[in-house]
Image (cartoon, rainbow, N blue to C red; front, top):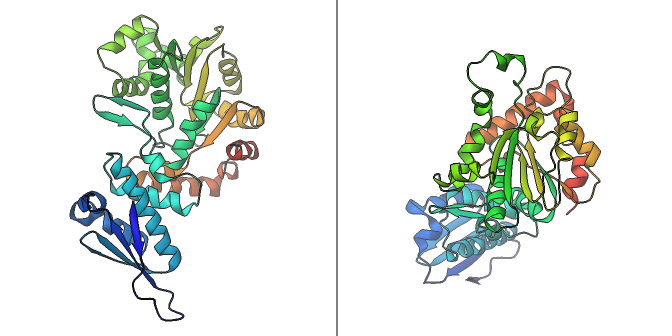
Length: 351
């Protein structure tokens, strides 16, 4: 924890209130400030009206009381992350500032230190507040829809939760599925067996599995049926008990396919549906099942709609800007893509 002391009181009417934060000497300042003071520079860029001076283990802030108080909270949150053995990064500091500015009840440190899965030294955890809420919703609901643009971690985090559930023996198997939007006549002209034709559509799911499990164990688990990766058409007529089922790229399902998939739910099973309603690849005139399901199931208990945005993109910084730019263009040309519909908003705020 940090101690805060106030130097000489400012003159009456002076809004720039100086405060000094004293960091525990046991905390290496380089962990808090970053190599070459990179993290300190990040804080200064986020608060251009606050003067930040570091001397030894003391950080003096001069600025408006609101900004100073927020930076003090930020430092306390970052110290918790450091104490948990989690290295800080520029992105982690930026996201912590964003969370604090949202004035939510959640703590940035809780988000940044939440561990879903560890594999070969790599930890998989949420990186934004909405991602943590999405992960929590998967724990608390039987059916969860993760809706958002590319790079928001909706599929990756769902798969991490699936592997976690399998390892904890809460489910007996994992089923990963995607609609193969080209699985009609055009696929028929491609060489190879049906499995070879549809494999490219399922490749992203295989790639994620290799991040989360020992690669040598994956063929054995798939041969035993413990992990199944299959196109959506293979789900028809089945009842899936004691399984963690993920439907990826759900914007490319028709309304009939979405109904078919959701009614596969069996006892002891959990479903996560992920997709981006702004990237539908269905033939013209076909309604996306992901778009209409928000209106149909928005008020059903034990069904949760988690909305992720460009602020939750965890790829290159430009990806979030690209997503926003395309959203603005879409809004100008198709008003139906401006924002989540009414049912989705109700479901998102119901926590």
